[in-house]
Image (tube, rainbow, N blue to C red; front, side, top):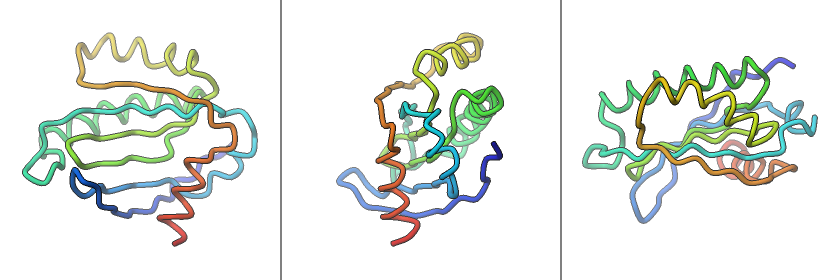
Length: 142
């Protein structure tokens, strides 16, 4: 299956500050396949600038590491990156994965090489991709 590389950009306000969202479009084939039923979020805590956005250095480090992780996940058909939320002193990467175990097995060797990182990873079942379709409806179509 060919992944779309079309993205939208939107912002929304929170009590902690503005959040910029980059969301991936045209993933219906993947969503409807039923293969990717786990929603997994990787959260990076950052020091950030005075607006809660990553500093230039933080942004470069996070982008570099997440590019390697995302490439490994997508190349192995383990997970699909669907959104990146940036702001409020955090960067959140949202994936849909075949399973939490497969996700973990794919990224564990990469994370071990990189050492201690300020990240948290959480997973929940979302077979219908409710979070993704809600994000698209609110931000890309609205």
